[in-house]
Length: 282
Image (cartoon, rainbow, N blue to C red):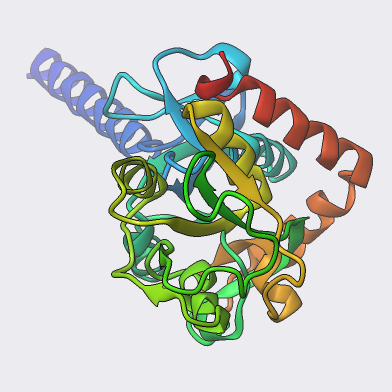
């Protein structure tokens, strides 16, 4: 009887130890363990289709980050900032490739923690999400065909009769209303689509920002960008780029501290590198 009781006690202790181990393993799901430190995952949403801010490539060259669930990698200016922010927060970076129109809803639902996607902190967006301090400031450009009827345009008012568009849900599309006589077309889903439309003659121009204009010139033959004078009138927030967060996020102040440590010189160098390293430039 004593032997049976001892054996029963040993079995029960073994089961308790196994159960405890299983519970510990379950609690660690979705995190990376380094020694005694557990890193939380930072889920960052971006299109990975807006070079040089963010793009998709087939390998990890130039510091690109793997996109989970695919064989693709995300690279670009936004990715470099995402890496620095994740490091500053001591978190593991996870890029979540998301359509532009899905970024804010994904943030609100908790599917992602941050939007780092060349997004401007305009008032309309600030009503539904929060933003950090800006990490880049650009200006508007118009992208046209080199041999097209508007190749020599200088001002936003030199596009009378032109078919002009911009990406949906952006200030690029909104400012077309300032162009005297321009024919505002249906908004496009992405910049790749606008380049195809431009080359086919479906549109005469599209509104973008200078880094994307440089990218378009590199990516396509017979395309150029124009910095119009006078340029579009816009709130300074419309040409600034910031990190988007869920309303009331506790990360805002911490991320601002990380951004403050990145000098203006380093920011410019990161953009120059992004322009040079994007797939269109290779």
